[in-house]
Image 1 (cartoon, rainbow, N blue to C red):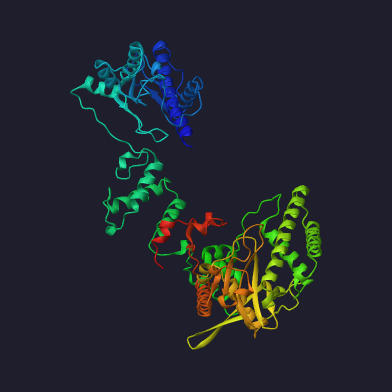
Image 2 (cartoon, rainbow, N blue to C red):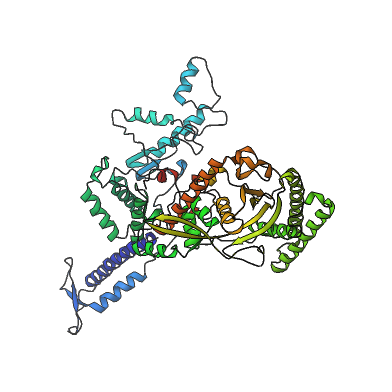
Length: 624
């Protein structure tokens, strides 16, 4: 950005030099023409004077006052015209080969010396060099029909451009095109080699990026800064890589570059951060809190009085840095207005509709009732909830909102039909829907009347003392058999539920925590048949994921992939309990590492990927 101003200053300095020379010449000429004229009185002593006597001239030297000399210089300056045009940042003049006739340049660059570029290939030309084409023609093979006059004209343009250089001539060509196809060198290059023989023809391959081993290759301040930064990455003597400059030279040049503002302090800071991020261990720029005061603050925040949730622990198990950004820093992703119903709003509405509908048939056998009446009642409940939502949040587009409502009503109708079939299959066990939105540790008007304000408590023995963690949550639905005292927990999902591997590794801890809440707070004497996810989608199985006991397979409609024996059930729940305490210790210790559990798969729909800048190779090399 300073090039135009610097150019203007240089030209202004040249104008001032010319004005000074013109003023001196004018006084000298005046003294020669009117040598007989003599001053009638001496000039006042109060004003400094100078003597114009740079060259011998007839007559004595005449004293010229400084003010009159400055006036003459200013007159000479005003007589000059300093034209200011558009700045050429490249500093090069690009001409066609046909426009250089009669011109002379110290250095000439001829670019694009490839077959098809210079010389220009006609539409029927081949990729064979001219020499190959001529040699094949001697053997009776004619690859193309191209006029010899055209080739001679192209050669004339080439040699005319080459002869414009008085000191240096550079012939350049790309090794590959933008389409990554290899190019063929123009035969002019070989002809020129023979023409200047025995003079040396030096060939050098220039990379697209900066060569960090040769300082003299840097032609701008930005390239010099890049060179120094790259070389500074290998200041460690044990790095095992040969450096172009010594450690002292690199540090000295870096200091000079900073002093001349070639490298800003912010850039130096960012380089230091990137160097630390690329280290072998997790640091403060990979989600590891190292400041003692911040760690003490986190330990207090996630102390014994903190109340955890199943969704928060699952978020930490998937990616601790995402948990840190969303639940500790409370960074909210930018939301945009949408014409259709968002997934989170759709989930809340479906939850509310199912809760209101099933509350009217609590612990009842639905297949024994009028099916059409049930479907009509489900539709009326959906219309009632949709109208309430429309009054609170007016839709941006009324027609799209109506279409969304009808789609949700179709899904709810299919859910009801599936529910009827499910109760028919499990009728021998007598499992009936009993609790809806069963909350623990909190309560709201939409929660089940049997909800409890008591927290779920998980304990562990540590250093001879009992440590307790508090949890709150809300179970979407609980089906029970009061006669046999059996219970099954369900969590409504609009997407795929968690698999057994997700539960065991702590990526989804909702079901084990819900089962623990049923045992401790709501149904202490009941036998738990398991828990899983009830999918609210138009297609596919609805109870396809979860954690169920194999001996109670007739209580649910699940596949064998989600059924485990009692020993495996206890092992998985113990493992989840261990994971939960591991997550709690990580929160208290400030361990929010950029280490998603499933790598890029976890980051697929993350709102904070621009903040963490997760890189698989960089993170996989780190040690905890």
